[in-house]
Image (cartoon, rainbow, N blue to C red; front, side):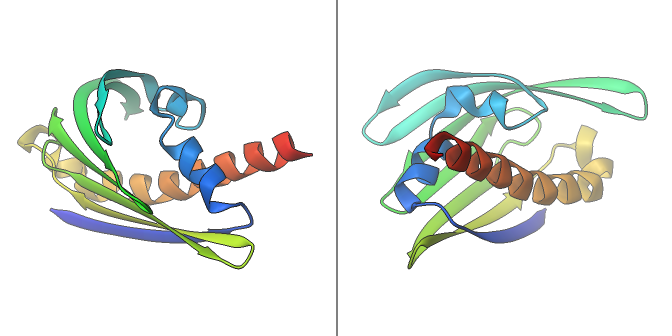
Length: 147
């Protein structure tokens, strides 16, 4: 188990970044390791997705298939991996509007199966950097679309 936290203040309206984050099928545009994200079910503020993620590690290509249940709350998204090597991982994203900026906080309780246990420090570092990079990419897209 590993806990990961990151936050970023971005000059974008909360509603715009929130809508972009919950547009799961377009997530592949922002996350370079995601091959696909498919919505299986969407009802009552709960979205179930299947994701295919692939990456290289020391020249070995890995492909991960997982299923995630995301609960959409007022100012928060809580996603739980229910199938795959990261089963039990919980990702919480909170949005807080402060004047003309939005503070986005990401908290991850990372769980890995035995196969990926040895990679936990690498995965933890990567997830923190990728969380911030994804938010920067989303912010850039929002700002370039508005101009």
